[in-house]
Amino acid sequence: MTLEGFIFAAAVAYKLKLKLVMIRKKGKLPGKTFCTSYKLEYGKNQLEIQKDMLKGNDKVVIIDDIFATSGTIQASIKLIKKTKAKTLGVIILLELAFLNGRSKMKDKLVSLYSVST
Image 1 (cartoon, helix red, strand yellow):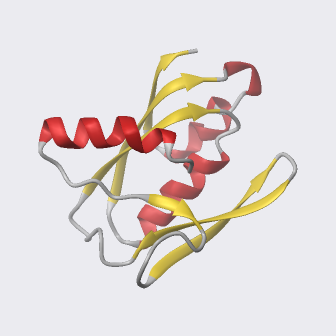
Image 2 (spheres, rainbow, N blue to C red):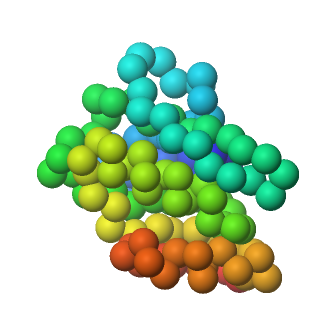
């Protein structure tokens, strides 16, 4: 994920007095991490989450700035699952609906909300 999504996620976490957990591109986080690969339109990339940031009883809402093909969000859900936490939903500020990412999320059993399409 790029840093733009963290601006909005940090504001929500602060307002609700909740923990902010970052998922970043490989090599950007300190300590031990879980890692997963995902496809891009033009290749592959990897995302990581710190192993000790979430526990099995934690519930997570993913907040990101742009939703396009769903690759980043699907990889994020996979990482959260590795920590044994549960993804409740996804909030996106801008959905690029013409890229049909939402149709690739139907089997993920999470709610997806976008502020703008």
